[in-house]
Length: 497
Image (tube, rainbow, N blue to C red; front, top):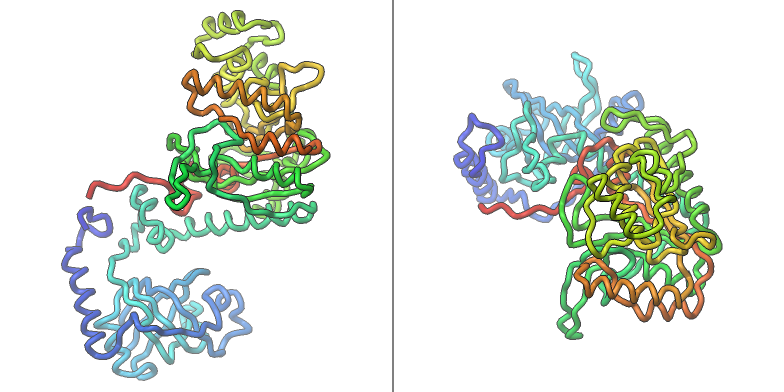
């Protein structure tokens, strides 16, 4: 390898050559480790260590990766790692045979995948082990694992070669197992509330449901330009129109935007829609679900994220966006009635805005600049400007604001919810405004979706909708600082070499 990141004391090219020479020797001997071989497994490492009293003296079979070995004459102690952890295996020449013992010492390497059959016992030093009666080479590794005492610490390499990261860093595997548990509990929570899980198309004609730049593609057979979805929303609302009153989807979305510790172009969303409720109902659901996820996956509703203690047990705080800006920026938008006044306030406080921004846009800019970073404990920010909420119902008493909330924790948006706009006439007018923004150069503004408007004309009941960025939520519940730490394969630019 050009970057000798594994062990500076070895000649990696020579070592890789030796591995291939050993492979050839085995194949010449009729012992091809890549032959189609199955291996019956009765127990994993955790089964054995957790149930030693019941299994002591029992015959077991297990399989895993060879991670270390200590040769002691005609016997070897080695460590085998499987999905659940590691266990020591004792291999004695007279038990496994001369040929196997010779192969183990001369032709098998750290990183090879072995099958082991033998008896569970405890060594004189008290370590739970398996005394092998049969050892089989199932797969030969032709690469070099990182040196065991330092592991795989290069961050860039960890993300690019996650398969090695999972082998060498048990905490990484634990994070992804917890991610799976979080999503499983999320499904369980929603299923218990009579939601049904659905699947909707990833490919579409119109990017809808959010303000974002899509990825473009082309369908050759249909001679049709298409986009990858930026949101799950439009299709799920169509299902509400069709009479499915509680639906959710956990799926991939794609936004052609920047990469940061909080953003990846490909990410996972939960979106759900419930007929005959509103954004207040979505607040109750969100708070209850997050409290449930913390309790079931962490065992507590009070936990730390990057040194900050979070409390999911207490009722989540609620503030309107106007109240939040007044509290943290000392600017009262209840007293700012016109666009000119909003622009003057922005200039006074150093808030950068564009000519296309209206009063509500500037209120949101104040919120982003002065408020977000202060929202550490779970806080619902409610009643957003209607200008930034074009799919959301307006308040009847004050149509400047939408029936919407965003949930912020440690300064990050975790959830976004609406009382969904179901007036097709109003929705068309808002799409027309979005078209004007697109014409003015806003690439994130939404194009008109005629079929979506047609669905609303058929009739959508009053509906509450919620979206949660699962990757950010997993970051929070696993105490990981970057979104790349909770994605198996984050988007990365290929290396030049």
